[in-house]
Image (cartoon, rainbow, N blue to C red; front, side):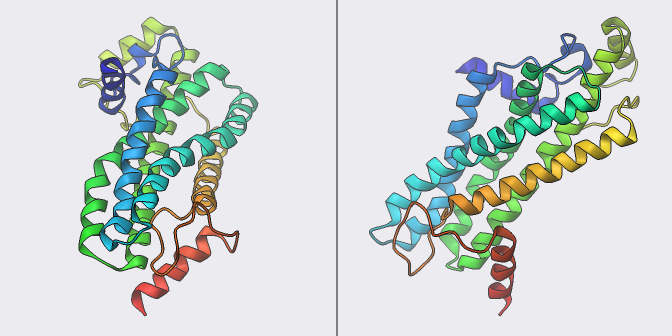
Amino acid sequence: MRSWWRQLDRILRGEATRISAMRTGRVEVDPVGLSLLLIGLAATYGVCMGFYALFRGGVSAYPQVVASAVKVPALFVLTLLITLPSLYVFNALMGSRLSLGAVVRLLTAMTAVIVAVLASLGPIVAFFSASTTSYPFMILLNVAVFGGAGLLGLVFLLQTLHRLNLVLDEPAEEAVGEEKGQGPAPGALDVTEKQVLSRHVKTVFRCWVLLFGVVGAQMGWVLRPFLGRPGLPFAWFRARESNVFAAVWGAIQSLFS
């Protein structure tokens, strides 16, 4: 497990996504071991979400904490399974030489960024769970946390794609030499000076990023409840209705009404 933590640390510090570290044309991480660590971190954030029900009390509090701890990892696993084929096909159509294994490792690294940010913000969510009874506020807080973490992860994805394609399009020694000549080593989210992705390719991948965000948001709506709505009994799932965007708009209206 210590090696999994080291891999996560290397991803967050940008060491795993430097050009010199991707000479093989992929992010060198163990997708299985790292995924197990990410499931644990995602479950930790789920527990923090479930604290809202815990501090309200009632017989459904503990089942809701357990349900949230299970659902947050499931949210990421299901979203990645649904969007992986489209990313691989988009990647192939744009002429990139990334293999399926490289795409899987890339998505694992992206998920590591998202989940690490979520886990780091978990104590803040738990604090507000203990200090407020406003259900709409807690919904919007978690939407903001997921949105911010997802945005950072997707920026990481795009920048790493730039670097991977730079490695594949140029000799490894030349790419490493260029990186060394840039001064301080770039971080995980830093933009590389030399861009090899065309505007058309960038547009396609940005469309995929939007698709990933929409699928993830709706998947969260399908898997609800994560907090446990006051006045309703515990249930693993709610009946299908409306969509996540209507629910967020309704939460905004309720918060300021």
